[in-house]
Image (cartoon, rainbow, N blue to C red; front, side, top):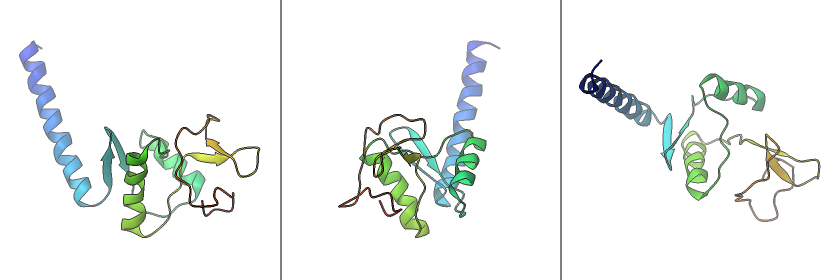
Amino acid sequence: LSASEYGDVIHQLEHRISRLEGVLRLNKMITESGGKIFATNGKSADFNATVEKCKEAGGSIATPRNPGENDAILYFVKYFNTYAYLGIKQSLIPGMFQQLNGAQLGYTNWYSNEPSGKGEE
């Protein structure tokens, strides 16, 4: 293919992706923050099933790294009137949390007197 033909193909793909994202936004299935897309299927699941579904979709469970990403997750919590699992876990030290891969959290937004490790952080 020529450079022009590649450009046409890329333009067509960008247009199609934009249309698909628009439909998903209308259905409250995706939102975006800082170039990252946050998605949900709107269904309830346990933590392990949630982690697996995220992997199947080619992504990972959300781990907010800044206020904008936290707000993107909160968008779904408010819209679906439920809680959201995050890609964090309690460390070996009670009341301390880390990313699922063991890395230290660089951003937190805990409720007052949290985290307690009791599920209401």
